[in-house]
Amino acid sequence: MGQHILDGNPPLSLILRKSTRAKRISLRISQLDGRVTLTLPRHVSDSEGIAFAREKESWLRGHLEKRGEDQGIALGTRLPIEGVHRELVAGTGRRVALQSDTLHVPGKPEQIAARVQAFLKQMARDKLAAASDHYANVLGQPYSRLTLRDTRSRWGSCSSAGALMYSWRLILCPPEVLRYVAAHEVAHLAEMNHSSAFWDTVTRIHGPYAAPRDWLRQNGSGLHSYKF
Image (cartoon, rainbow, N blue to C red; front, side, top):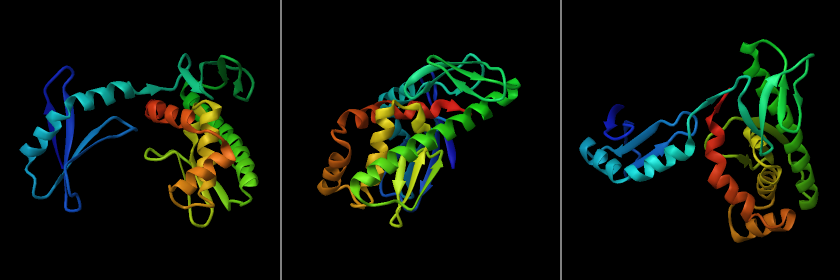
């Protein structure tokens, strides 16, 4: 592992990594912290890899700009919940309360992020369970269990044993996007692939899916910028 700085405004920091398994040079931007990793096959020199990164500099800067700055969670933060930006404000009582354009969070300042995350996870579980139940009933095949994680590489998955996994950050998306991801993973109960038969199954249980899929592709990476 090494590091290199690409000159520019601002400078770009690259993490250089050699891999015996890599067959070609690749660049990867972490959705969690924005770090850029340049992976090189063993036979490729650092200078050759850096030249490759310079050729891709516009692409890198574009994706980093689209990702945006990391955002902490505190009172005053505007956080998308079901696709609507709500301001976090001080709450009273013991429970977090969702309003049309605000989220009321009681507790000490240092507890805000944890309380908001717990609220969102429970909300995500409720919404994803309801959507998964609905599409599984339409499909006529049950799933075995449902779990939530904070994954950076995928929004959901379905195992061969029928276990569904979702990113809890889907609750930040518009409801139709969350439902699409649920339909996508439930469809894998019938088709463990991405063949035309799979996409036909998604259409059958969900309906047209291009719009929510495109929304996720265009906006999904930004949802990882919120740091709890």
